[in-house]
Image 1 (tube, rainbow, N blue to C red):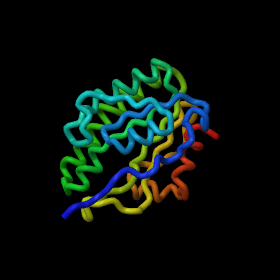
Image 2: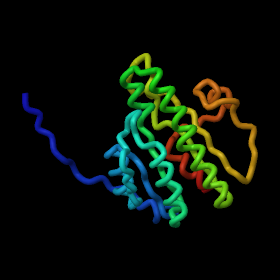
Image 3: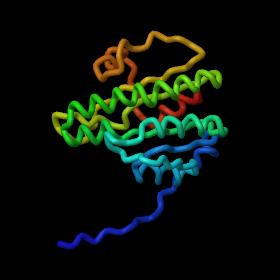
Length: 184
């Protein structure tokens, strides 16, 4: 069988800097994510050893994000694909290990560095669920964590789908999250 497939027309995305007045960067092993970043005028930062799987260079991605902030980037979209890929493969232990590694080797160092630089806001969320039971993407809502170092809110007890549902906070359109993060 031959599957003829080629490029379509380039999508038109607004420039991130023009839309938000900020300098943005993308760190990801996934070509689609890098392409969206490039198309929106964000700096695309390549990290050696970034594979998108459980063996990715988690620490290298964190270091690249910290370096970008220190060099004047205002917002870094740091995409970590490993939990998603483990979900597709049905690898429960690796999915847990990926999330634990993200907590320890990415979030910990990045949040510590950001706190040392001054006030900050951070948004943490999966781009979609990939439940182990179905091993594919679903359209279910995802939890998100929006933290502002300048204030303390009630928050959820845990970062899970169930805890998120208990908060009663639901964002119908995901594209509104950027405005929430940037307080606009």
